[in-house]
Length: 593
Image (tube, rainbow, N blue to C red; front, top):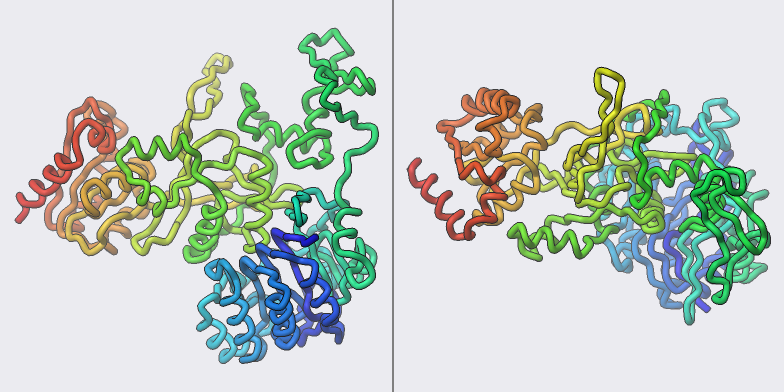
């Protein structure tokens, strides 16, 4: 029976020419991977969705990588993509060539990545090596951070010896995501195999700690047996009803029964409340603490509560990452998500075609916890998510924020089609609690649109986002249309046959407006903001601000209007044909000629 891995890390060497003060591995060892480990692994594995190649310094062992690729092909073991980091102390053409061969062998080469570690701990990379590696089609500068925050340094190996480690990483005790199928077993958890063939449940530990944390060795045991022996099994005291025990658990809302318990098992007598029940029985099959269960329930889309308690902390917001890094990670994130049927129908009803919807990469918020965990495990296995708005850590594990309510994720792109950030459009605006002057609290609908962001003191390793402006359409066009909202801009541009539009993420969010308009340098600007400008004094003030910024930056500035019964340009579009919209824009442009 073959094994399919969603993510596997393979340690190919412990050799390294550097002694970085923060290295979690500890002192280097003059050891490379046993080739029997490679052959044994390839015999038993059918597929690896994502492969992490690690060390030591991987560029020192191109022969091991070539041997690995030979046996992957020999045993028809498929690879989805790979990630590898090098210190680039010297250029190795053999290393570059074999990684290129891996790149061509992978089923998803667009997700493959080589990066160079550039920070305050690594010695300066060789300029020639950096120049040559950066030419590779799969190179990504994601590890060229310049500076690693002290809070991100794991208290392992040399970092622990030097007293600079800031946190410890708990090691999982079990493999939880194992799905036996007809002729193979699929493993969703990330596993690590070191140079000796030891199997470990986590990659982030020193060489010394690996000796104590190994759950088996593939040279002396079957890999499948190691996995199954360490797969989480439901404890004996948990009662799992068979098909005849329909009414095993009694649930009550009466606080006087069972002394505040809300459930009671007729078979084993176990009692508890909703939180303790979820702690034992949750979609991921993990044994949670009550605190973990409570906070997961708060974020669950099917759980409703009047108010989330104030849990302010002293978490520090991380600095946002460069645009090209954000864009690559958001693209990978969106590629792991789906667009639900209800959201597809919604977008089609607004006038967009299926091809445009797919091309714009609209996706549904992953409200299902098990789906969300699978996505974040795969994404964090490929990328460092620090400094990326929308992601944060909890108990040293990356999480996805803003997933409690159903909605659509909308990419907010710049003029070069790079994703600056994601905006959320909720199906139903989440409720918010308003405290009146007399101290009473009332519930009101919140905002329908929100940034996918984790700024503020409530998120560990979270990152906030600025009010970026969405650009869509022909950037060479000399007429620029300005509207509110990335989705409105997408719809209007598509129905106007690719006219240039920018979408503010809020009529008052004009921080980057002058910068964007200067970059597009249009001759004419057409103002297409929502028709509530006629009655809303706040929007009127924002309109004045927009005009004061834009008018000096173009030759002509005009306002495009439609009946006030339709608030936005997309609403007006819904009441008329595409032809009428195109004609209106064409007539407006003709007036300027």
